[in-house]
Length: 431
Image 1 (spheres, rainbow, N blue to C red):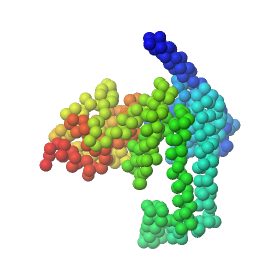
Image 2: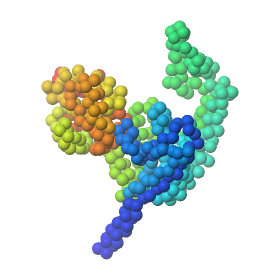
Image 3: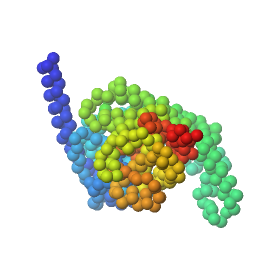
Image 4: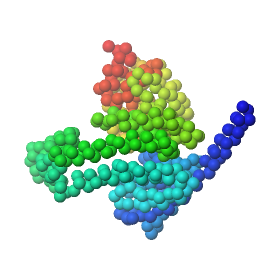
């Protein structure tokens, strides 16, 4: 038994040593100069609003660029044009940095294309080939029909087409307000009731498309059961975040994402042992369960003196609102401003606000707090040093709120003051 344990330990050390020497060489070319010559290459999930380093920025010369990555484990990376990102609508390509060479081609209006000789990437490419034949090729054929301007009348109702065409060309200032409102009402109706915009023929095509795409994730899960791969671990992480964000969407189908959790615990939890993605998945699962009635988590933050402390020491014996915000997040700041009068009413009755700002520098936080007039102090989460957003399941959103009772139980994760104030009063035993 002792000898067997030693052998297993040595094999694990050998594996981890190999994993610590990942060298990936990237060669790229630009099919367009419409978006300039600056490319961003960074680990997947990096938010440039918070963490931005010179090494992420790669300059192309004569339409070509190269980049070398050295890392401890194979990791997923993002690639995109900087200028596209700055417009708010950018095409992100992903590749797995492992011991391999990667070739990437950048396009103006679609995701980058990759070729790679990495072992894990080849597994993913084999799955993609099957997926293209079964799913994407037939979906693209349907999309080509629906998007053909010469056939639009076959597939979409006349008043919807007319309203869209009108909205593209009108000058609002020169038209009667009643007319503008009537056109907007038609568009809004169909945007909220998308199924009604189709003709019978269009609806048949739409259902055919949905039937195909509804099988995509079950296929991926079934394939991953038989063909474990590192890339699927990142799919699991994305699925958990999608489930966490489900309440933000109308008619979100959780059944498309929940099987990833079962897949992970049944088949993948021991795949590629020691890889940091396992810790990320565990953190994401914990954050997914941060719901009313459940205990809030403890984690490290920097207090106003710059000292690292457990957040539980700041909320102890208080009804506390954990307010995750950022200077660059408009909705976060509006929610925070709306909370000011509530804070003033109950701050002397056992209520407190623990505000944490996710920033690249202290000055941005201080300027925003001063401008908005927050009466509470803000803690600083600088460059994601404590992964506070990840631990709260906020992803790359600007922020979130958690109302916590004195015993650490989550009372609400709403950002609506009208919903929060009655809960605060009840927790404080105020009639």
